[in-house]
Image (cartoon, rainbow, N blue to C red; front, top):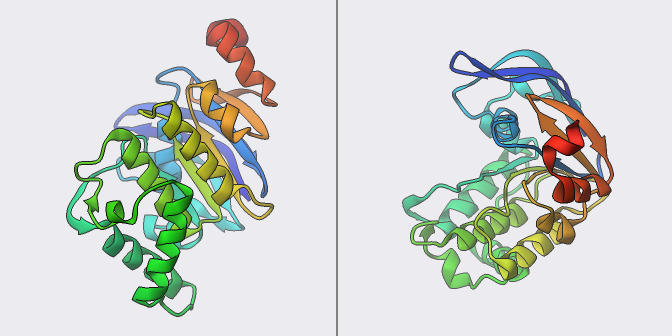
Length: 247
C-alpha cells in the first residue's frame, strides 16, 4: 500500500532523512519509534506534503501512485490522512462545517454525491461516539479552547469521518492521560484496523502500542530505518533504551 524507497529530505539546508526505505502493506499497522531528532516528524510531514520540506532523492508509491507528485489535497483525496503531533486551531470555523466540507470535497474528487446535512450529522454522531466525544464539542470552533487530549480525540473523529485508506499518525499519544490514551487507541483500532487499510504510527512510548498492538515496529535513527521487528522490539526499547538496542 505504501512503499518508501531510499527517501532523502531536507529542511532548509539541513538533511534529515538520509536514505529511508519502508514498506507497509494493506492490513498492517506499522509503528515507528526513535530518539528525538531522528526524523520521525519529518517523515510524516513529507508524506503529507507539508511545505518547507524538500525531497532531494528517492520515491514514495501509494496505492500505485507517485505520492510525491501529488499536492497535499490530492494526497488526501487519494486516501491519505495525516494526524498532527500538535493539531492546529482554526478560529471561526466549526468542526461540523470543516468536516462536512472536507468530506464532500473528497467525495466530489471520487465522483460521489455529497452528503446532505442530515446524512453528515448521522455519520458524525456515530464516529464521535467511538471516541466518546459529545456532539456539542463538534459544534465548537476547530480545536479552539480544546485541551491537548480533546484535540487528539477530535482529530481521530476527523479520521473516522474521512475514512482514509492509510493514516500517518504523528505522536497521537502526545498529551494524553491514561483514559484518553485508551479511548484514542481503541478509536484507531475501530477505524483503521482492516484488511484494506494501513497505518504508520509514530510514537515514543510503548503505552499506546499496548492498546493498538502493531504488526511491526521499526526504529528510525539518523534519518534511516535501522531495525524492524515485531511488537517485542518496542518492549526491548522500553526496557533497555535506544542506545542499548541499536548497539
